[in-house]
Length: 408
Ligand SMILES: Cc1cc2nc3c(=O)[nH]c(=O)nc-3n(C[C@H](O)[C@H](O)[C@H](O)COP(=O)(O)OP(=O)(O)OC[C@H]3O[C@@H](n4cnc5c(N)ncnc54)[C@H](O)[C@@H]3O)c2cc1C
Image (cartoon, rainbow, N blue to C red; front, side, top):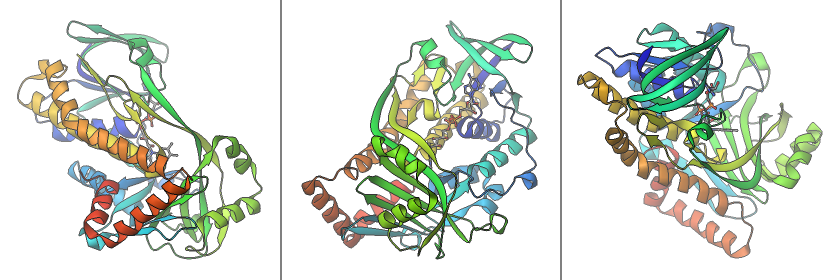
């Protein structure tokens, strides 16, 4: 069987990318989306309210992308608007506040539970007829051919061989396909782990997101919608960066001890910390693929770049890449040039167009993480002066807000 485009991976990036293609095509094309998990159109009403549900901060830029493909209306009921971002350094006066009014937008960003985000995407995938879906199935082999890529699919009960002009690899980087293709993933560990959990606190967060720099590393609390089903009052999603040697101890602390340690680091802006949910640790590394394009191949999402989660930029950057690639490919197909979708020169133009955004986003999240994980006195003084100056200088504040909002 032959396809114009095969997308390997229907996670948040691959699934969103497929919908961008479906929204932009006016001419027919053969496109296949493959995922190891079933992408059934869930009945959203059946999602169980869960105090521990994991969530993602979508930037204003990502909202615009979902708006453009007609998905924002379905996501909006689950989105908690971020009206303010409060950046501070524990034990020091430096702090910056970013407001949505100052940026002239309805919200600086939104926090959505991942289960709602995937469910809306899967539902939309189930309702469209442009993209064929094969799930559960695994892309187990990929090999270059003169016309694109030859692919082996592992499906329940057997194997299938396919050819495609373009393989879009959106597998998250853990499937072994990159290694098979000889693409190196350059991994730079931060020697830190992110402890992720939801917490409940006394005061209404009023749509404020907090980014706080502590002696252990940066910490973020994102506002979540209140949900009477989980009986939590005010709830937020915590990402707390910890040194590798202390992370396991903090993970295993009894709840009251954990809440006291968190309160001491975070302070009282949200009143007393009242409840902590299930905790999980993620080892932190900046992982960058050494090549993102080859003839007939492009990497999207985590497989291309995996960032430190505390700055909340990974999915947002991937959606901007996906949107630019979808535009290039739909323009190519709509112009009757489907044979060119895997052409290296076109993919190179996409990569060059995204290069600055990728570099500046990686640098922004890497530098802030490293700068704010360092307790050398000269650096602490410097960054506090920086925060104070930024708070006093509207253009600098707006620049910082634009980075956080995913607008470049
Ligand atoms: C703790 C944490 C918090 C985060 N918070 C934020 C945030 O607030 N904002 C933000 O922008 N980003 C955030 N991120 C980053 C964001 O979660 C990722 O950028 C995003 O999930 C990457 O999605 P992906 O689709 O590329 O990869 P994945 O989510 O890994 O999806 C890959 C998909 O490919 C499928 N697959 C794998 N191998 C194969 C194969 N061989 N064949 C077929 N299918 C295959 C898998 O089943 C899966 O569905 C956070 C990350 C972490 C860890």
